[in-house]
Image 1 (cartoon, rainbow, N blue to C red):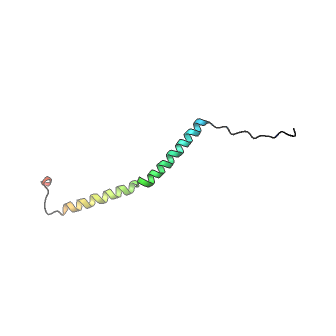
Image 2: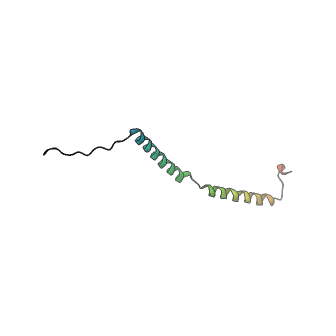
Amino acid sequence: MHGLRRRKMAEILNLRQARKAKAKEQKDRQAQANRLLHGTPKRLRNLAKARKEKTDQALSGQKLEKDEHDY
C-alpha cells in the first residue's frame, strides 16, 4: 500500500435540484434589480395618492367657475 493514495469521495449532487436552485437564485437577483429600478414602497405610493386627492379636493372647492359636468 505504499503507492496508493486515499481519494476523497466526491460530493453527490442532484442535478435537478441544482438547476432549480440556480434558476431561483437568478430570479431573486432579477427581482432585486427590478425593485431597485422600479420599486416604490406601497406606503409611499399611498401617501402620494392621498396628498394628490387632498390637493385636488382643496382646489376644486376654491373654483370660481363651475365646469359643465358640475351642474
